[in-house]
Amino acid sequence: MGPTMDPTIAAGISLRIPHLPLRIKAHSERALAVTSRLQELGLNVCYPGLPDHPDHQLFEYLHCDEYGYGGVFTLDVGDEEAANALMSCLQNEQRFGYLAVSLGYFDTLMSCSGSSTSSEMSEENKASAGISPGLLRISIGYTGTLEQRWTQLLTALRQTGLVPA
Image 1: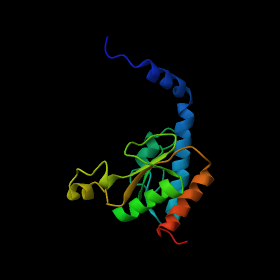
Image 2 (image 1 turned 60 degrees about the vertical axis):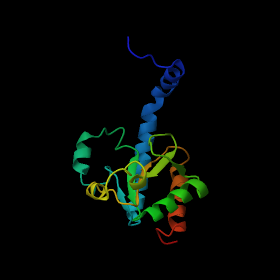
Image 3 (image 1 turned 90 degrees about the horizontal axis):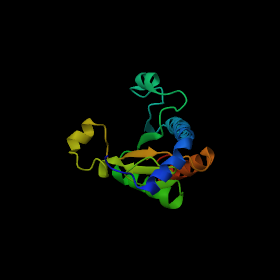
């Protein structure tokens, strides 16, 4: 008959499935709003919902209008030191989110891909894949208001010197 799911896990899934569409929509709306603002600041951000994404036309065709383009984006801050400083400030001072290598949670999760999930790749392979030492992967959460989260992110960017104060 195959594997049987733990009843506690099954119960948790059945409780969360009904509002999954609301969560996905909130993730996508937040990601588009935040990446648009980051781009306006002149930061190097990549999100398929932005018109200048290299595959935006394809994503425009494939995405579901109701659910947007997802909640994950990248922010390249140049080097690993800047990435770690920003993530530390976001987690410890601003309470913006958490450092984690798996993404997709109700709260914001972030990781520096080059030194975590892609750390086994050679420098040459990372470069050809567009993974710089300062590339942050961020899965934006849906807790708090958009303005609260934006203020936390902007404050951390200013505190770490990534944007002018």
